[in-house]
Length: 173
Image (cartoon, one colour):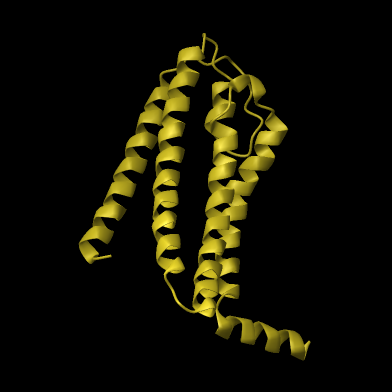
């Protein structure tokens, strides 16, 4: 991983995210909405907003599905491909302890990635007829709050200095 490759990946991520977001916002603002007091959700997410469309929304829902597929499937495929290379490299490690440590590091990241993409896929990649507001709120909470809260927890607890400090604090109490 060179600095050039890293910068290109960051720029590609930001440009793709901006492009998809701006396109989705422009698309949503072009829709005819019914007069309603609000949506049943914590934030302005696409599925609850799409439920407010007054016109035939089949084409609009299909467009959102295509955008969501690109935004979810492409990064997940890239992550899965990189993990295939990582697993191949880890299996070449001669010591069992080295393989276990490498797989342990990968498993925590893969757990968070699977949780994030699984929840997003559940919310965005299903037909609008199967949307349930309460269920969508719960799943949205998992990927909006759960994943960001899990990341520091998982990676902090993997740090041996942090584990030692936590054990000392708990031993004092």
